[in-house]
Amino acid sequence: MAERPNYSAINLKKLRTDAGMSRSDLLRELKSRGVGVHMTTLRRLEEGQQQMKVEELIAICDVFEMTLDQFVHQPIDETTARLTEILRDLRQTRAGLSFQLSALHHELQRLDQVLSEPETPAASQSAIVKEMTELLDYDTPYRDRVEDLLHHFSEEPRDSGSGSR
Image 1 (tube, one colour):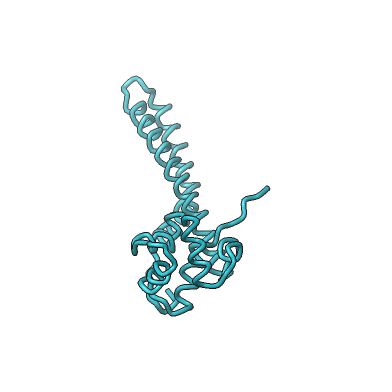
Image 2: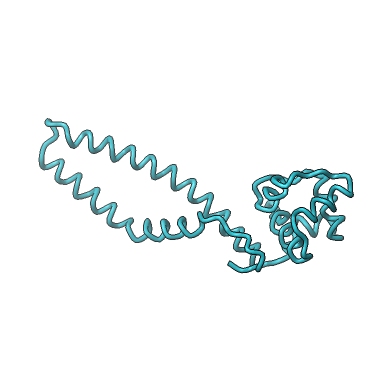
């Protein structure tokens, strides 16, 4: 069975801002329901950097008059939900690519070391350098596009209060 997506972080920020509440306002509402949350914790919850505790989930659902299932599993804003999903996938892909690029860099250093050894025949050196160049040239368009995407999505979104970026 596939895991159901968790929209609690997206929904929390959307509900809070749609209600015209500041983070401080929401913290007061939660405190009045017996749940103390620090401002930093609330920010991390909204950004999806921290999982919500059961008592926090229940209190938030009470504040916004929602069921737990609606809050966690149904996106308030489908577009934001989809973009957040894509961004999460890109970040996971970036982590995998970073690992693979690190391994590639290590292998290129080893190859460079072998190529610089005096006993490596010149013909072998030339063939290996040509093959490396072709491999790197082949990946250039993809690498450039990935770098563009990573640069674009690595920038932290700004909370402008206007709802647009």
